[in-house]
Amino acid sequence: MVMQSVSSQTDTEAIIVGGGIQGLGVLHDICSRGIEGVFAFEEKAVASGTSSRSTKLVHGGLRYLEQFSQWGLVREALRERTLLLKLIPSLVTPLPFILPVFKNTRPSWMVRLGLGLYDLIGGNTHLPKSKKLSESEVLSFAPYLKLETYTHQDCFLYYDAQMLDDVIAKVVAFSAKKLGGNVWENSKVISVKPKENGSGFFVEILRNNQKHFFSTKAVVNASGAWNNSNLLNWGITPHVPCLLNLGTHIIFKADAVNAQPQKSAATLLQNEDGRVVFFIPWNGSWLFGTTESILDTHPNKIQPPQQDKNYLVECAQKHIQLNFPAEECIQEIFTGIRTMPVNFKNKILSNDNHFKNPFESPFYIKSLDKSISKLSRETVIDETVKNMFSIYGGKYTTYRSQSEKIGALICSVLNKKGSSKTNSSESWFIQEMIAQNPLLLQSDSSLRSN
Ligand SMILES: Cc1cc2nc3c(=O)[nH]c(=O)nc-3n(C[C@H](O)[C@H](O)[C@H](O)COP(=O)(O)OP(=O)(O)OC[C@H]3O[C@@H](n4cnc5c(N)ncnc54)[C@H](O)[C@@H]3O)c2cc1C
Image 1 (cartoon, rainbow, N blue to C red):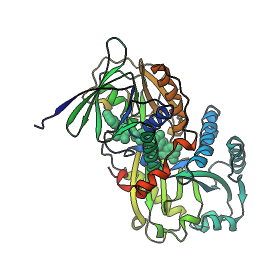
Image 2 (cartoon, rainbow, N blue to C red; image 1 turned 120 degrees about the vertical axis):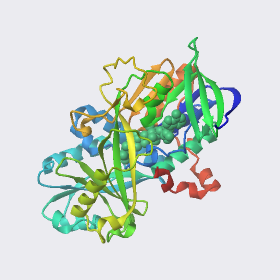
Image 3 (cartoon, rainbow, N blue to C red; image 1 turned 180 degrees about the vertical axis):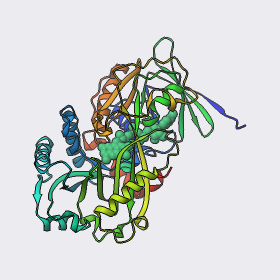
Image 4 (spheres, helix red, strand yellow; image 1 turned 45 degrees about the vertical axis):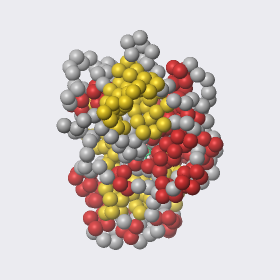
């Protein structure tokens, strides 16, 4: 049996569980308000969860415009896109997108209307407006597309942005530390106990087989897919049942197609089954993915599902002029998982102790009676117990504005004033980070391997 040593208790202002973009974003926000004594704990490495496994788009989400209830989210995301393009231009860059219209998919007039609205909501940006392309223009933007599939189709061009997701998370962590925050990796939060007098929490951490004890006034549960399982492990009943949405991406080698990633547009494909698939030039290679599956098992050590891989390979063979058989073009394949809150307005009453198998509890929904694309991507911030906030759902693109909301909540718990400054380049320390280790600004594929 491994011996665990113990350390004495440290008093803190606030503790954040999870070193993904949401947890680190909250830390950065609180620190930018001049508040000290705040810790973020990450069980593995910063950005080793979904925050290195996204589609790597900083976008409003064109297809969310189909639901009027999501327009607010699209507006917020497009506002954040503009800000991030300005604040961290080396990590968030403009990306042209081709959007072909096929028979049996959304009609041309609807796409044109949606793009017009997207331009309008996008507001004052330096990105060019959307337009219809001629056949030759399509081929100059996306020479990798299969010619026979694309002639005689309407094709549109619009602009969004892309990012180095894991690198942004590392820059946010670095910047938070420069502003006085603490980030502990390889540190699992094993217990959170509300104090009997309601003045805060006792928190236990396991780091390198050593237990560390903390006392804190507020807790932010930003542990992504593990949110509800952590709560149940800590003896706290969640309020927000969620499903785990899984997405699979293939990175195709640079020479998989006859085109240069640096000079090509991305393509948004609408498949006949209604699913949306992205083919994106990314980081010198090609990213191809879809994000519409439901995870019905445990998220630890998850492998990309064979059916998603087959789906993507088939779709690539249909639409993309690959230089080699698809399997030979694959450089990497990875999977990401996010929570999507479901029916969170109806409380689940459960007296069972789900400690042993939290992912089998009713707080993880395993099936849905409608398409997953109909579920909202909005962030839900739930005060699970007094002064403990759990974050569900949300987009990478809106992490900063949502962190600002949580930063304000923490400020009021701590009874402190101070406004968020993450919208100003003075709160970002990219140059210092480059000076310390320029390699940190490169995407680290090992984070995406399970
Ligand atoms: C496939 C996919 C593609 C996506 N693509 C995009 C996109 O292109 N654009 C966009 O805007 N959004 C996208 N999203 C959404 C976005 O990526 C996620 O919302 C975001 O990355 C989630 O960040 P997070 O910090 O909540 O979770 P995570 O990054 O998963 O971080 C949670 C962390 O908590 C840690 N943790 C868990 N339990 C504990 C514990 N007890 N103690 C300590 N640490 C713990 C985990 O190790 C993990 O690192 C996508 C989502 C998915 C699933």
